[in-house]
Image (cartoon, rainbow, N blue to C red; front, side):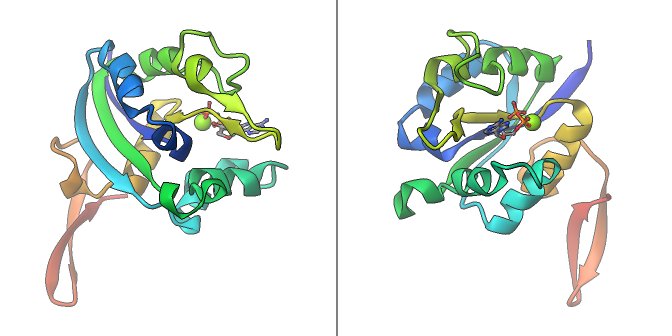
Length: 171
Ligand code: DAT
Ligand code: MG
């Protein structure tokens, strides 16, 4: 068994529908540990970088609006981002999360219990989680700075910007 870390996002619909507690409760059953957490207003640039593999798909623009919370108006344009760590954390989390399409997800998984497809065809599946350790590394480095994570998980480097030392990921 490998000790793994992954990125978990509670998407704008999860926050809007007050599902944060329910989602974290289901995740807590996996006995992972939280090593990073924050609330983020998602820019279009961050959304595009996060979902870069889906560029060109017919639902891409709606997906960007969804992850930015744009489809719900100003009050809901934020997500909660977490880095969790644990033994086999990725496969365990994917199982509790359920498959991408909330209508097809196991009804007691997070997406099966709380997700829906809107009349416009957007998969409101309330949560994102990394699908393998390479994707996890890319996503964690995209969403978090090294000093926002309480454990040393990936290599860092020190650089000088405007005469000040900065700690950044050693990509
Ligand atoms: P996952 O989030 O399960 O890793 P993914 O990486 O394939 O799934 O896709 C990312 C998100 O894009 C997914 O959570 C919801 C959206 N999406 C994927 N396929 C879709 C489809 N056929 N129609 C609408 N939205 C879709
Ligand atoms: Mg994915």
